[in-house]
Image (tube, rainbow, N blue to C red; front, top):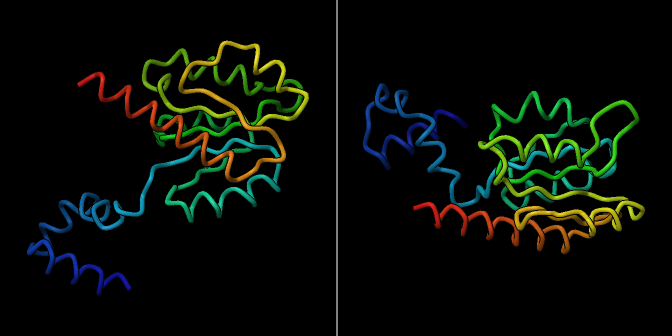
Length: 168
């Protein structure tokens, strides 16, 4: 429970209650940092995809935020600052496509380096293979195979880490 967690943190960090409250978010991040791999923004219209991938991503140490459409994701991305974006390649007519959403993300200097992985219908694979995806971008085809997805996420996160290291 929360009172025993507070007591544990106070003992480990040897802080008063007021010091704990002042730095609560840092302490809680330290507490979960060993298991936390980042935040995934999952943009999918397919309920089955979300029901299948979300628990697996969570058990792999990711926080998962789900969005039904790219438009909703645009409202949330600024607050979330995700580590990985998983996005359906196509959405209903009249809305943003996954590719258009990627172009919007690319246009932002704050988000253009975030690993972006399309969840692609077999019909979209040819178009994605011929598009000029950057090293931090990729795709997996439906039905999504968990091993392929985790491999692609790890590959894109590695590229992201190398990019961040090059800036230092």
